[in-house]
Length: 204
Image (cartoon, rainbow, N blue to C red; front, side, top):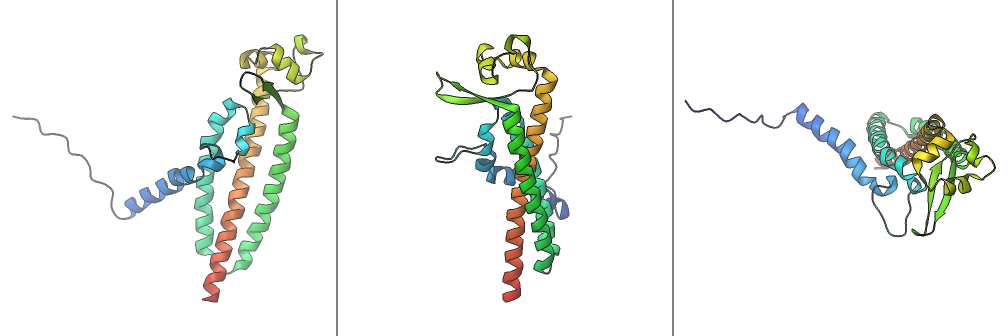
């Protein structure tokens, strides 16, 4: 008696198929479409905001930001489909604008107070490191940039000098502020598009 090959289940149908397409579209499609903005694709003449961050932070900020932007796209699609007048969207747009401005200020202050940029001559570029207000005795009288140079740009030694937990706290603050800013910008653009669509329907 021969063994029958395992049957491969067919693709989902009906609502399940629509759910799969929507989930992939809002998650994978959104991430691919926003790759240049999120710093996951190089575009000549354009530098993403994420390029100013330490390289080790970029590796986890990109997927987290992509996931959040996919969620924002779902919420905005729902709002645009339920809103019948521009008035409600204007209120949401105002809130999104305030959110974005606050997030930008928080990110700017966090970035200026918890990072140090060091110029690496062999690579001819600046490299960013997260630092803290407290540092080891070896660097007590040195600036942050000079301290990092003395530690040979070694991230493990830098974490040991400034405190591993302090570095993680600084990275968390920077990461949250960055993601809040990106989501706020995405919400503003989405609400603007939804507002224009409603006005267009009213005029037609």
